[in-house]
Length: 624
Ligand SMILES: [Zn+2]
Image (cartoon, rainbow, N blue to C red):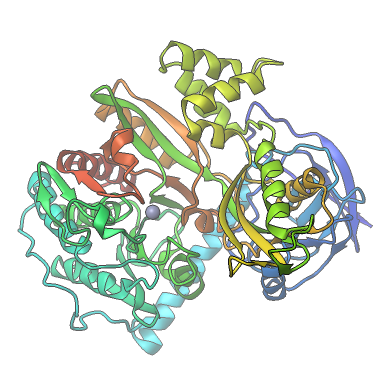
């Protein structure tokens, strides 16, 4: 039997050290699993990993990943990363799942079994396999180089909708020369034009937006490719290339989404799709989420192109759609169909914030990780009949009782590496009481009280500290004189990365304690992803540039409570960061998905300048 260690960590977070917990055997290989979690090999091109457990610790080995993906939709115990894997097995206590076993590197993932008590929160922020990643990137780079040469020699460059007549509104003409102030004013016009394209999802209609963006890029001499992901829906990809061939191994991807959530027009003071400029604001659905980011990304590309300075890295622009639902026709489509065009080592996306408080930038939150949404149906049943003869087993009453018990349950506080760093950093700059409670989070015996106090001050802080449960839909009854046989509610769970929906549902089932109430966990549309590193080159660049632009502000890694397209990228070994670059107040941010969404024009100008500097520093272009 061949023995090898599956870990050779090169970096470790100080708060977590690796300890041997189990030795696993599979076929002819033995791997030693640690209580840390390592992600370096997962998601690296061609090296993915997956494993299946039946909840009792029995794993199914050598499952082809295609089968795995299909099964995963119906089975939340199934975790899939990418590509094929060599072998997999699980610990006999149901708590360890070995995801990837290979002659060079291995990877394991520790999770709580449904009945288990072991806490694994924060385990994701474990070790990184630098050598393995480097090796992968080199081979990926070579592969892409060969592909390109093959394409040019034998088939010409890939065809796309480049140059196709646009059905979108006319694009304001760009001026020549490289002046960032002038470019910002042009970009404001581009943003107004983009807002005027109604991309409410569903149905989306993002193809018109993609063509509109492609036309702006093409006018600037930047090749842009539009791809239709479904009728009327689409994405646009463009690239500034540093060398003779595309090099994903160092590339930076600028990501944004063109779809928006719906509106209740009667609650707006202006036309949500009018792109009106009034009182120093640009108004409209998507002004913040996420069309401003899309246009800022595009303007940065234009700025670097106009400047004509040499680049050290490829810079890729991607505007997806369908972010506000599952991402199937947006980021999933882009990854599935066009990965070779968007593959990058780093990405910038929405999800972070530059928060203005008392008239100055207070802190910059860089999203490095995000919670995972999972829907759960709660179904109560009872005897149907005429309402004139009430019974004690009324399904609606039963559901109401169950929901009350669910609402009374508060999942325990769990500090992850990212939230620990976030609250430590914020404690140093927050006002007296908030700062004191943030420091108390780590004091033995005071964690729960501190979390409760912080949650009362800001519900987002509470949501960052634990799994949360929101009741979002209730359905029951169809006539006023009929007692229905069934009543259902939808719970939207937001899980900390690494947490299992099954464990939480098992806890809820126990608390509801009613055999006539059942729970059904829906197939997840988003998967848990490893966090992005807080010591990467890009993170450091953001920190340095932030210090230049906002010297008094703290720069903090952040866990976002909402889901973004970054998760899918992180699963593919991209170091993705959420950085909404515009300095905004809480009041501005509250309009996201709300009424009268708008962006202050000064915030747009400042955010564009800041984003431009981050990107220019990182891709190595000269400063304007
Ligand atoms: Zn968004």
